[in-house]
Image (cartoon, rainbow, N blue to C red; front, side, top):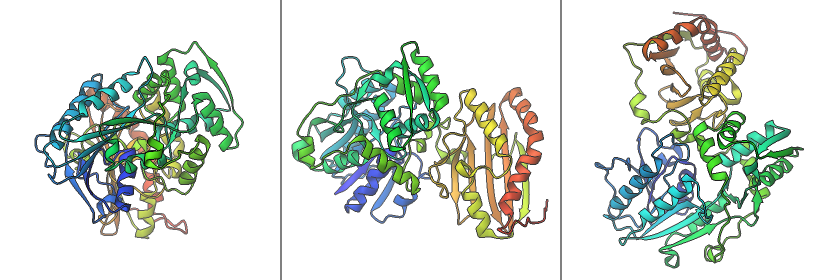
Length: 482
């Protein structure tokens, strides 16, 4: 089948695309930015790409001969106060475009919406479902609750809490009940529902075999990790305080923390149906899902992460709009070193950040991360999705990867930390020299004051970093050249 995929760089869509390719389907993947195509998909001969912004679809060119489509566009991390109308508009534009094709079925992944009172995001999910209904194609909706898998927001947040806090004083919403579902099972439902006419124009709740409270999920997670944890729930933490609690303890952004707290107050219990029999699946229990997620994490085989979405940080634009370093009205710190072992230096550059650190004065980098978190930024806690692999769009601590081209020997990062301006950090090897450029475009007087306040630290932080990058395996450093 020829299938249209939306949300290509997202957590679910990227994994689903790879699975559908393994099943020999032909994919047409929608992306907002052609500079941000996952390498695993770009290299596949059965996969093509179209540039589409479903909020501004005027110039979109969707092939007419598609057989089915997946609508997987959603962001709980959005900072917009008007996200419901934006999501409705996005879904409406998608429907208009797909209705002009030969598409027979649209599959949509939504949230379980059975509670009497719904959160803003669950209301939005239901509104999108209603918007997607059409006389031109059949809509199949799968409604899921908490999704558990390596790189998922729920998995990463629970891991942060359990790993860091032996004793927890927590908000009362930890007693809310839910039915967690493994990401592998989500993918099985999404791919298994393709082309099944008995599922046309119907919605199905998909969920795991257990009803658990969030507290029970934390404790079972701790059991899988062989950790002893104690939890006390208090009724006094307001939603805003609860959001700050999640924000400072975990790697989530404040916007996502607030959205999660709003949703976690709502019970997510699925309505039984025959969907498991139709698809031929028996969803795994929560502990098994957690164990499998850790296996992927330990093997450094995480395919996608919630942090990959640009909305997990401050970056909102297309990557290509920032890919050229600005030349005017900027402050610059440029350093240059002769490279001893090019392959070694490239690997060091591609391994920077995350658990590997920044090679020089890591305590200062961590302090900068704590300061950023304190002022509402992303901090260093996002780390990186892979320890030694980078591609455009990846999060890298409080940076976003704009360009990662090993053939060109260039890595370009854009700052997502709280700054009175915009910042870039570039590493490039050219003619046997490593060039390291930090560029800052200030915004007003505060931007200029900020640059001069951190300038003294550049002398040893950036110098130490470039020296570490050209240092060979025997610890010998190249001679400096400026």
